[in-house]
Image 1 (cartoon, rainbow, N blue to C red):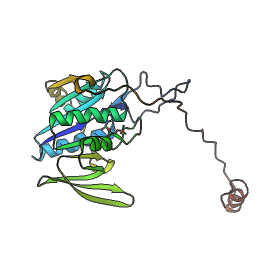
Image 2 (image 1 turned 90 degrees about the vertical axis):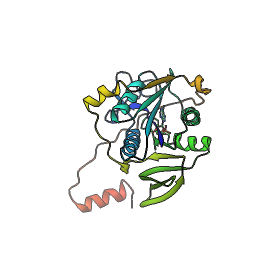
Image 3 (image 1 turned 120 degrees about the vertical axis):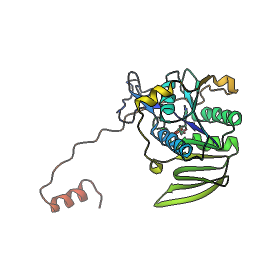
Length: 249
Ligand code: AMP
């Protein structure tokens, strides 16, 4: 069974980003970039399925600028077998990414496609769903457990206050949630080994996809600054202030 996993290069989750002074976006110049955390979970799950003898090949794909190559190398060091970079000089919107992934699904014929539930930069939560629709595949979003048996994926999904378990006929699309697993760390010997693994670079045109942006960002703004709190002497003053000033009662 072949698994296709998509990995996006995003600003590292530890970095506090700042909005550019002209409000056109977030300043990412000289900022640490890493693999989208939900994609790390997807790679880990695919590698575990391979280690368990369920999968035979894990192919990782990224759509983005040339530096996304580093993200793919990390995925190879985590245990993926082969990487595909679909190179674009600018950011690619979720619909175009979904179209690229659909073209790769047609070409590679994976039994399982794994994506993160969300990229932490754009917070779109769209790509997996759009890919499933374009490819006509069953999908399970927000997966917290994945089991493969008898040509089916049994997927537990995070829902409000619990989990919903679905059975999907393969091939299928699964998007990962935080509790699915805890990704391993990359080791130096594996980084060295990853350098020898197959790496293909394509252009969106090679897959017949037009990535011209359709959306225009009008404005990006910082959240309003929180005002400093105050200390009150006793509960009575607190209740008075909540009633007369904050008007929460
Ligand atoms: P989004 O719909 O943008 O929140 O992204 C959801 C998931 O789609 C991510 O976790 C990735 O697995 C995948 N994805 C989105 N954009 C890209 C990209 N440029 N390259 C590779 N995978 C992507």
